[in-house]
Image 1 (tube, rainbow, N blue to C red):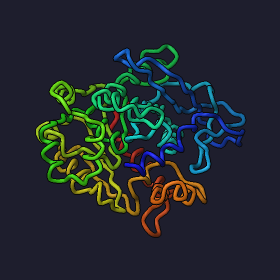
Image 2: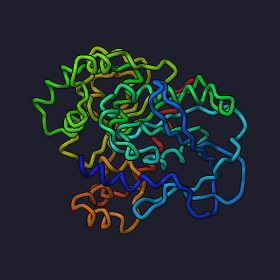
Image 3: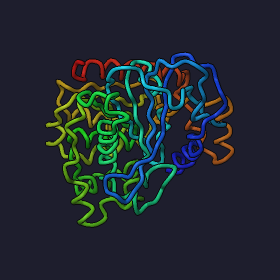
Image 4: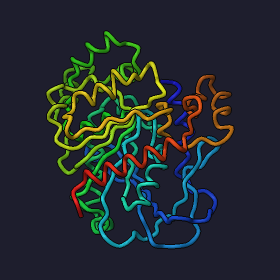
Length: 349
């Protein structure tokens, strides 16, 4: 979607640190790059974590459209082992899209890692790489590898308390991690009946599943048993999952959808469809009042919507909620629901 591509393009410069800002609840932050598991790509990773260090914070992710977050770069992590959460961004998004959520969870004691998925990130929209959608769940697994095996992190994160959260295409990614299996023929047939869906457009634009080799790769088991709970935020491609595989997902799942409505990402064909196929005893489905698909991105600054609208008419919707709704209030509700779900779902310390 052009709207998504233009909006997240503003995020491309977000990794640069901004001016000092006063630190309240101290959150450490590190960013680094590692080789991906397939050896042919590089993965950019950002990590937020609790720290007891004081001092002046710096803003990351702050630009003319989006509000940044205060962090202490390279501060020492707080003592003890902390549960790990890995974030997966949406199509043409990037690892700072849910920085607001990362900071909130880090304040609650979680280590939160986010990764740029090569080929489907605003920092790399190479179609030849992006069509390999099966690499996205593998990216999540590789981040877990890095943070549980690297001596710099192995004593900080708890390898038995790992969760994954994904927005949009990231929601599909974390469901694959949880054990859902994609069926390319099923999705092709569904898209013939629902061609206007955003998920069908993205899938077709990438050329995912265009040949037998790609279809076989998409349909393989991409689950990671180390992940004990997953959260989907307004996902797409849900109707491509094999119903039998959804029924056998063995970890708790929180499915959240935007109640503000989007004709190209209808809950009945995406999030609601997903929740209905998952085991009822371990699934929670929440419609977020007033939220749109883009409400799960960072807060917009005053004037941010107008700036996007001037750049490309229509793109201002990235900064819009349903009438009367507040993105800050939506973020607080979403963060509280996610934290409660993770606290209840991850194994005790």
